[in-house]
Amino acid sequence: MKPYEIREGDLLISDDPALLDRALIHRFLSERSYWAKGVPRDVVDRSIEHALCFGIYDAGRQVGFARVVTDSATFAWLADVFLVEERRGRGLSKRLLAAVLAHPRLQGLRRIMLGTLDAHRLYEQFGFAPIKNVERFMEILRLNPYK
Image (tube, rainbow, N blue to C red; front, side, top):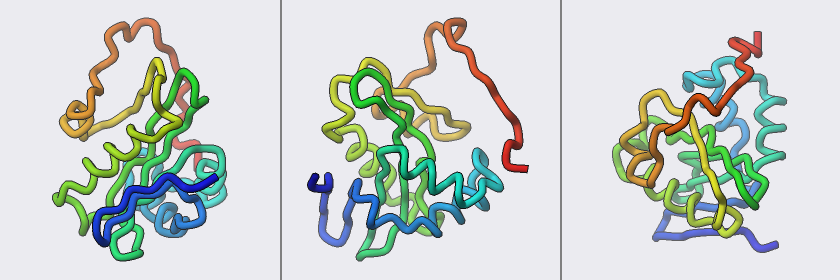
């Protein structure tokens, strides 16, 4: 199947897993993120292999990432969204999110969810809102599972 790609000059957003810089993704998630500190490389690799993943590339260099866990029919969970620090503040996260949400496999879903500590204003621009009936949702939370 042909990769889903959006090009704007030197900028490329693609779901082609062959383009992903897994070392960069692992380094960012394990060292820089608040949600996956210390995540082992094999866990990152498995998460990529079992999800719909997007890279954002500037002149061929990966500068960001987003991962969607989905059944491609009713539900999706948006996760691991990041831009490398030196590329922030230029609208790239908005371009990445717009491309992710326009992906053909994510159309017509009943629910798309995510978790964020500090990017509410960004996600609100794309229609995300706080959960209305939080009492319906449950979780198993394992703090520090990588230690």
